[in-house]
Length: 209
Image (cartoon, rainbow, N blue to C red; front, side, top):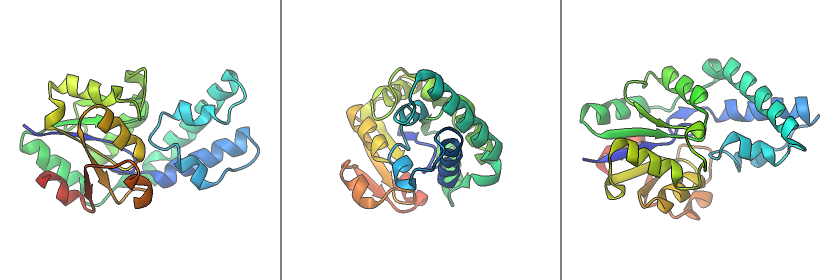
């Protein structure tokens, strides 16, 4: 039985504009300036606390930054985020065919669950490994290994589908084949450096891997 582990943002959910807007809002509030999109994109796919810790001057400021980001992000979420074309039908098809599915995301469960509700894919992903479920987030293998354990699946039967080098590194370290999607925010050159097992240009290609 094939196992499919999916990242959320940049893979299933087109939320990159929302993420960047949330970072810029947080920066204006706490840093009094905006940082380039490229700076924040480099941390997409890792836990939010990890990304913000690089600009916070203290734990107290980090906590305040996290609160500001999350409040803005959740407030704007349903207005700005949407499904990538074709992904919902592919996920439902895999589910109907009896594939093992799990969500593996660096988001906290609150945000991840909000995303799945927006996509109407809550039933398809009963197993969700989020930032608050692990000690070490991506690119560490722990999230992938925890998903495999929850599904009762073997690494050699699994694919990890994602849009970032962090996804590829996490999957490879866990011993699973990795699938780089080309519709996310990262240039192919950046993903090539992470040596994905497969490339897909359309969600419709995933079931045949």
